[in-house]
Length: 186
Image (tube, rainbow, N blue to C red):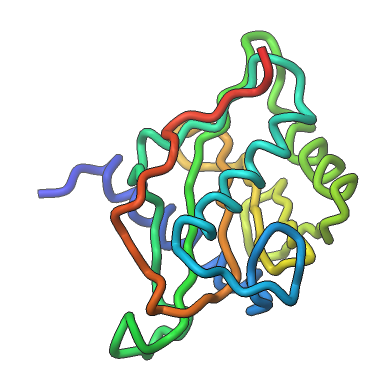
């Protein structure tokens, strides 16, 4: 039997997955060049991790993006909900992280600060209706996206979800690990 906290976690993962689908542009992915198509799942995952690192580089010491409560490999799913074969249809990769904030730093204003950081990186940023507020959705020129949300159920920490644009399902490899915890420069 699944307990209440596991049920809430599964609902949260489903909501965030849906939000990534809503914010992905379908533009080919990779480090900023919208004409580049990735050649491996590793490239895709490295680009998602780089989005987190670019964000952390703009934050003071003491912040961490912790994915240890989630799958350490992230999540690779079909771009089309009706797809019947992972290897024939395009897929999207996403990585979930809790935001660890230094002691004494209020989380109020954190999502707005992240939005400002993402705009400074040249990403388009908006707040979306229908999601707990405050929230920010950012999309990089290469179609990768990142989403921040503070208003989570039962006192969970603020969260981030970063993901790729759709890419060739033949490249999907659900066994590539990513670092569980990423930290700002300390």
